[in-house]
Length: 97
Image (cartoon, rainbow, N blue to C red):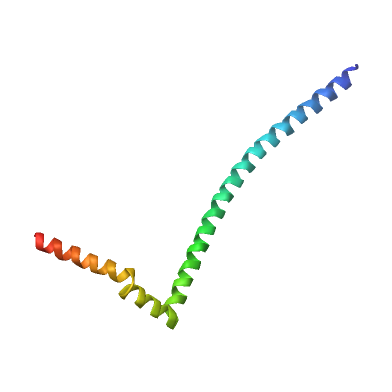
């Protein structure tokens, strides 16, 4: 082969090496960005679920049925039992002192 052909081969192989190296670096950065995007997406989903729960609680507390359910649960259901148990525990603690 002649000298100009060798020079052209070296220049093209060097450029190919440079582009491959840049592609690998870019690919590594892209993988890191997608991992960060996934974390942000998961946090966003958690925030959306919490907002839905809060909206549901507000909706339940603003309707008549929700208020009735709240009072029934707290004063006749398990809530009343927990309140009585808490009062008994506080009374026992006061007696022990």
